[in-house]
Length: 314
Image (tube, rainbow, N blue to C red; front, side):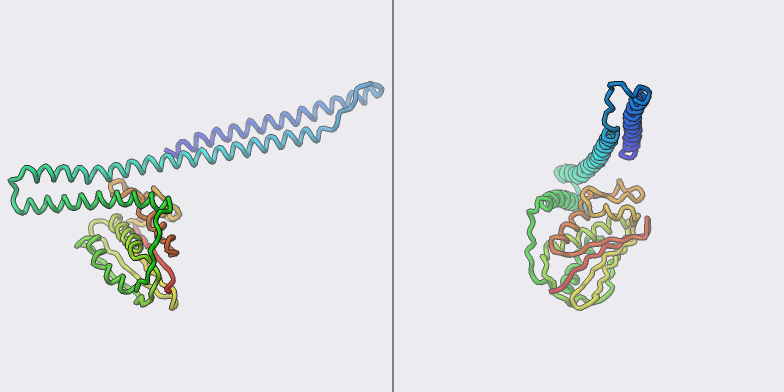
C-alpha cells in the first residue's frame, strides 16, 4: 500500500520540481532578456533618456534562491507525507493484529464456558476444556499486559528496582519456565561459559526480556522449536547471553526495524503467527532501562535468528 502510494507522490514530486525548474529558468531568462533589450536600445540611441537599470544579477539570484527555497519546502513536505503514510499503515496493521489477538482467546473462553455450563461431559473432556480455558485466559492476560507495558514504557512510568542478581543461578532457575513456554516437544539447550558474575539488575524486568525472546523463538520456530541459550564471558566484568533459534530468521534489511513498536517480521507468510509486534520493543525498552545492550543477527530468511543481551557485572 505505502509503496504504491509512494510512487504516486514521488511522481507528483518530480513533476513539481520540473515545473518549478522551468519557472525559475524562465524567470532568469526573462530578466536577462529584458536587460539585454535595454542595453541594446541604449547602444542604438546613446542620447536616449532611458536609464539603464541595475544589472540582472540580484534578480537572478533572488529567482534562484526562491526556487531552492520552494524545492526544500517540497522535499520536507514529501518526506513528512511518506512518514505519515508509513505510520498510518503501521498503526492499522497493529490495530488489526491486536484485535485478532484479543478476539481469539475471547472466542475460546466463550466456547469453553458454554460447554462447561451445559455439563454432561466426561472427565477427559472436562480436563481438555479446562486446559483450553486456562490457555485462553493466559493468552488474553499476556496480550493485555503487553499493551499496558508498552504504554508504560513509552510514558517512562516504569522504574527498575535494582538489586544484585547472580546470573548463573538466575539462568538455572529460569530454565524450567522457559521449557514450559516452548512446549514439551521443544529442545532447550544450554551452551557456553558459567556466568559466575553478579549484576545489578531488576529480576522482574530481566524476566520480561528473556521471556519475550523465548516466546519470539517459539512463535517463529514451528511446532518443535530448538533453542540454544549460549553464555559468554569476554572478561571478568562483561557477560553475554544469546538466544538462538532455527526458525524463520530475517533479512538484513529488517534488522533495524526489529525493536521498533508495531513492527513484525515479514519473512514468509506470518499473518497466522500470534503476536502484536510489541515483544521485541519491550525487550529493547527494558534493556535500555537497565543499561543492557540487546542485538540481533540472522543469516537470512529460513536460517534462524540470534538475539543477544549483554552487560557488565558489579
